[in-house]
Amino acid sequence: MTVPMGVEEEFHIVDVETRMLVARAREVLDRLPDRGFTTEFLQSVVESNSGVHASLDALQTDLVRSRRALDDAAAPLGLAVVAAGTAPLGRMGAVDVTPQPRYQHMADEYRVVAAEQLICGAQFHVDVPDRDTAVRAMCVVSPWLPTLLALSASSPFWLGADTGYASWRTMLWQRWPTSGPVGCFGSAAAYDAAVTGLIRSGVISDAGMVYYDIRPSAHRPTLELRVCDACPRVETVVLLAGLFRALVADAREMVRRSDGCRHSRQPWLRAMTWRAARSGLDGRLIDPATGQERPAGAVVRSLLARLRPTLEEFGDWETVSGLAEEALGLGDVAQRLRRVAAEDGMTAAVDFLVTRTRAHPVATGPRARIDRRGLSARCRQNQAARLAAHRSGALPRRATRAAAADRQPFAGGFDPTTVTVLRPAPRRRSNGR
Image (cartoon, rainbow, N blue to C red):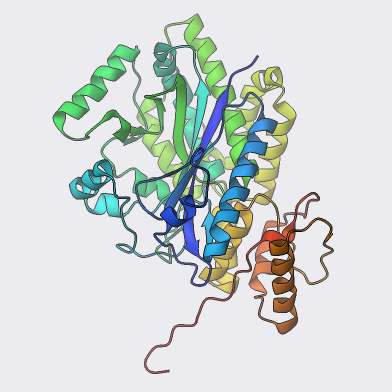
């Protein structure tokens, strides 16, 4: 079976000195190819669009290439990119809206709701044969979306404060009038009529503002998943793509055999989504099969068991099950971020995310062996700067601790000298001291 898929990833732009969110996306985009990268609502975000792929391996290669291109574009500007639902450090009102009429209208109409959108998500597209199938499949897939949210949850901090949530992005995102869980529709005509009614009411200005957790794409023959936080590790993105494709494939078959969703937990969906946003993988989720709370790991493994035949048919079982167990073993991203922040401060939490957003792990120790053959002049300069920083003691220890918190092993085949060294943020002086 071959079902094409693609991914859109959003990335925060942060200053490497202060670790603060900054409105410099245009500068980064000017250093990137025109195709594959674009602006978003706020000038602190760059979006990357993958190609269309039939295999998870090809998708991962594409995502790695995009992340490396972003890193290469941002580093010379003194910037770094962060894939997470929220950037830990930022200020309301410090980020400009991208100068486009549509975005300006949204800023004027929705005011604080729009200004709060210092957030990033990951969207997944899976091909469907027609729009009717896409709309009817939404109802079948929806009960499992909170589980996918929990796997992606990466936004415990908001404007420098701990929210107590694993995905605060979800709570901010659900403030839009057409966001969150979607209802069940019997046909594309019924869904489109509902969207047309919302536009006529003036609540939204166009179909692109339908921000449901899952929706049929307005421009492509795909079903689009929108519930997930942006993910620091590219492996998590691949895991979610594999799970979502299998869910859609199963739903397509159910729709083909019947009139659609015979049994739905639609009344539960908002509660299930809230629970996933609150607890992530660290607590309990609501099992779609029973409506009862269970440990998050048990619900994830229940989803794997449900999808195993389809994953095996795609040839994805070993990859997806292995990545799922790895995610459960590493633990909740939000909790790891909290541990890093508690030990070394909020700037260390930003460093943690920057490191994991890169498409390869980073060697931080002065004893790291680096093959200098074939390195560019820039690589050699970065290597020299990094070694000098170690010798002088200027390289913060928290970067090493952050790496240890993830227990992410080093991998061969990458060049660790292409990484921008993050220097300590300047100390703030107060009361004349």
